[in-house]
Each structure stands twice: as structure tokens, then as C-alpha cells.
Image (cartoon, rainbow, N blue to C red):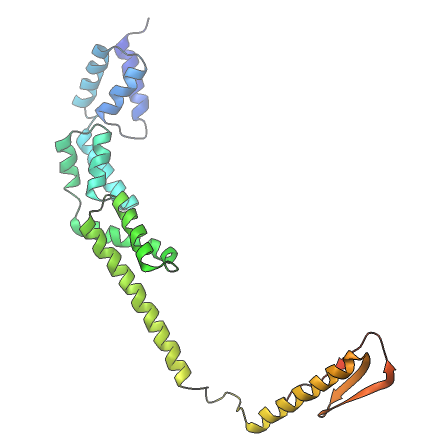
Length: 235
């Protein structure tokens, strides 16, 4: 039968390949493998002495990765470290390394990524969803409320500016090179519509008609199927 400490050593080495683990994580793994407690503790102590197990280094790396990659706030980071078995003081020391300004910047980036999906929502709904998202990331109500209001106020300001620009464009009238809409053109279009209406009445009787130059006249003097109408281009 293989020596329990040798078994425990092999299990720990394989678990540590490619990723760090806390002492608690390795202890739980050894327990699942039915390694006796005495052998497990001996191996864990030895790995700690040589630096293969380093909860402080694990905590620092975890905080750096999760804060920059997922935008987690210090509260959420501390909770995750405790769940992985990192001592409370060690976790607090690692979390304390997070720059408060980095936390604010992360919150703003999270909000910025969410803003496109908020634009069609009313302000109350958008604010509730954004606040909930930040709360799940570990941000306190004060910081979260500030950055959410900041973002929504900026969105409202941008929309107001766009509306003002549209109004200014309308007030300015058509551009200089736009076609001039004259009374003559209006009259010509009205006459054309009247002529087309008359043609429709004739055509309803089943007579093919030709429309042009302000008049409608039957073609062929009788019913034709299917009826058809030619209408000159409007001026």
C-alpha cells in the first residue's frame, strides 16, 4: 500500500499545476481523496514552508485579477477570499491594496458598458437595474448611486443636446442649394392630382385612359381589360 504522505504529495502537486490554491482548498481536496488527516497536515505544512502554498500571494493575485477583469469592489473581493479559506486578516490586507480611485473607475466602466441597453428604459427602471448590477459587484450604495446618477444625467444631457440641434436645423430652413418650392409648382402638382382623380373615375368604368398635359381621355373608345393609366411625371 502506498504511503499516505506520498499520495497526498502527488495530489497537491497535480492540483497546483497551472493555478494557485489556498491551504483550505488543498485540505478539502485531500479529504475528498480519503487521505488521513495526519498525512494531509504534514504535507500541507511542508508545502507551506517551501512556498508552494502561500495564501497571501494567492489573495494578492486574486484581488488583482478579479478587480481589473471583473470590476469587483473590495467588499466582493473580501467575500470571495473568505469563501476560498483565506484568513480574514490576510484577505483584508490584500483588499486594502485596491486603490479607491481604481474602484471608482471600475464602477464607471461597468456602467458605461451597460448604458446602451438602458437608453430605451425610463429613468427609474434604468437606475434600479444599474444600482442592482453594482450591488452584485460589491459596490456600496453611496458610490453606486453617484456614478449611476452621473451616467444617467449625462445621457439626458446628450439627448437634450441632440433635440436642440434638430430644432436648430428646422429653424434654419432649407439649405441654400435646396430646390425652390414655388407657387407655380404647387399649382401644377394640384392640377396633376385633379387630372389623375378624373382619370380614376373614368377608369373605374373599365375604360383605359391616358393622362397628360392636364387632361384625361379614353383610348380605344371602349372597355379594355385590364384597365391601365399613364400619368406624366409631376413637375
